[in-house]
Amino acid sequence: MDKDLQFSLANNAKEWLALSLSISSAEKISFNKIHDDFFATYGANFMAHVYRTTFEHVLQNMPDAERSKLLASFKQAMDMAIDEHYSTTHF
Image (cartoon, rainbow, N blue to C red):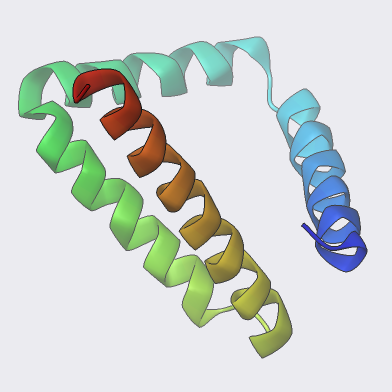
């Protein structure tokens, strides 16, 4: 991961942390309950669709440079997850 991407991800993490800290405990509990209820009711495929739709929406509203960095990170994470999956399931 290059320094620009690390810096960008660190800044994003700080912003998410600030947002997280600004959300009240009651809101967090409410969000967790709604999320968990949807997951339990509709399953992993439904939630994967929700996450994908959210990810696509975010991509549409990002500057090109940031979008490219995010997609590169996503591909790297997918490649690592696939490698890890096959290294533990197929000997």
